[in-house]
Length: 250
Image (cartoon, rainbow, N blue to C red):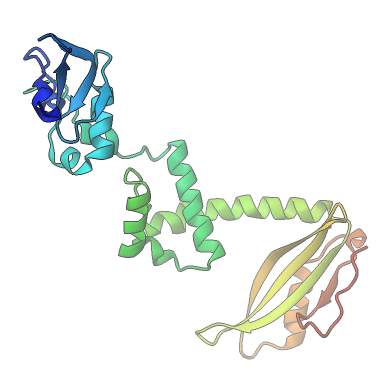
């Protein structure tokens, strides 16, 4: 007798639709069912049965996803008020849940660190990747990122930077002039501090847009005003060429 032939249908009293894909083997030398394990009719795997169908549903979802996605599993046959297995496993995460918050934070870090446009959250490829990684997560709209999520992250990072600068014994400022793809000129000011004299920390303090007719003296004045620190910090300003020696941190 083959493995498939030994699998007997579940008793009619077992109403859950998942029993369509499971049965029991009979005990050796007896017609009685061995109900300690249910047997999958698809792959003949033995699944521990403890009086409920949780393990059975988990097995189908993990090993036979094509069946789980097409099947209309209900707790009881013909009971439309019960949630299907697909609804249980793939219901959307609440917007305020811890996991949603962490994923959204990760998306923001990705946008900022890789300097991606905010419109990336609307790209089909990006949305497909997120759906693959976490089907229950809803990608926030570009408007939400722009008006709520990003300003909140900015305030958090700003507070951290201000706290770091206020406690630093010395701060060295680096100015970089650069031009965007739109041929607009900017000056980026980076603050370099020492932490316990063993690790250097670089932080972009501000990015200033230069008008075409703006004189260098005006830019220097703006940099000085926006990045003034206490006397104890002894700030230094230099350009970013390797040929110019880095001012020592004291």
